[in-house]
Length: 229
Figure 1: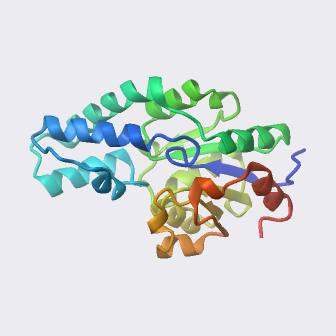
Figure 2: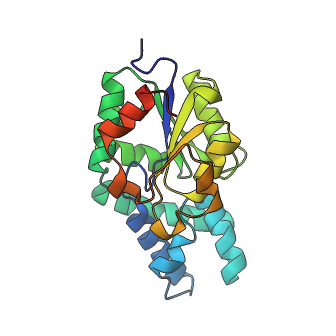
């Protein structure tokens, strides 16, 4: 029996569980440069936080007039990202502690991410989180990525938990919107602090405006135990 009753917890991966956005930025910068688009900045990258890799390359083709096909760009970006992810991805310490608390309390958990299946598995393996997070869903496995609710609903289905009994942890506005659309409560930790006022975050049950700097594993666990209100 879980310490939290019927609750299950679903984690976004990038920017929530692990600090992978620098790797995604570098993979994007390298890919775009290889296709004749130099000067991709971190500020440019922030526009894509929370959007699936597949959707990102679709936007690139329209925004930059790239001739390469979506599958070609997707494969290239994923290849560059995996090269980085396998050697330099770290889990946020308080998030690791939170996962360990949930595991000790027998709370069902899943990962629901816009990353590819291969990327999710690589990151969970290199950080050691795979030991506790055995259920994972990629946006590539469902019809629509975030802000559609598909990836969260599929995670709930695999856990065998009604959406109303799921709590999502998210760092991006599209993810918060997806959690709300799925009928799930959300702990929001904006990766980009300036985006904390985005209307999507207003739907969160718990908004930590300072992002990871405001997150404490014990406090989050107590909030869940007290009814996630």
